Image 1: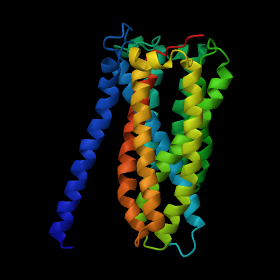
Image 2 (image 1 turned 90 degrees about the horizontal axis):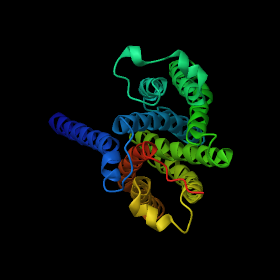
Image 3 (image 1 turned 60 degrees about the vertical axis):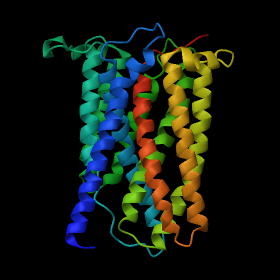
Image 4 (image 1 turned 120 degrees about the vertical axis):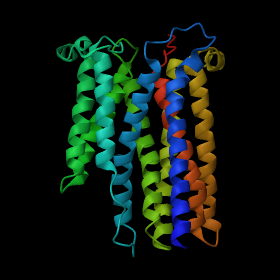
Length: 323
């Protein structure tokens, strides 16, 4: 390939990434308002901005978790090339820190968007459960970033686990019926999702440096674990949905409530992701060149990015809990 062709290819990829990032940002920004239209439910102040911040936080969690996961798999591949792509964990931690800081500022103003710095009651964060969890996420991303640039980047696993626990607890307040059950479901769901999304992204980055058969072996290892992750995500997602939308009302709520509408969109996207994963796995097993599985896997990464954006929008919507 000539230098000019490489430049055109690089420019094309940059434009594609910019378009995808813009689309991913529009989903949480505009999604809550669109989903609430015609439902009669009230939109929380700054729902779009909060959804965007939470999307950034989820993405910032997936990247380092995926890197740690795939790097561990890579060490078990025989004959693997010694080189791995540069880590994005420090940048992800910085983005997660800023997103968590923005979300903490909202909690510090009574779950309202602050109009000025004077509106933010930092000391008040220590007086509430949500405030303490928000502070925990801010500090955890800060520590994760320091670990990422240290000599032992694997130490990120502890602060990243703290973020996941904080998110699981935040999603299920103590006023909810059996909140610990809901938190446990969210804990498993979020952990598996981060491994799946971040792991596939980093696996494809590694394959840009590796060649067959080591690259195919790594993708095969990831695919086997991903099948288990998908099963766990599906099971916990179904259980969580049934806790919030009982079976006798779920069909109505999927179209009549904002939460149900966005949840339905997420289910359809996950179904598309599962189909792409199955296609990639089929190519990996049966194609003459197993690395042709990278094409559907790249499409899977894009679809997973949309799932993350929709998940961010879902957190900013009123939950239709009916007991």
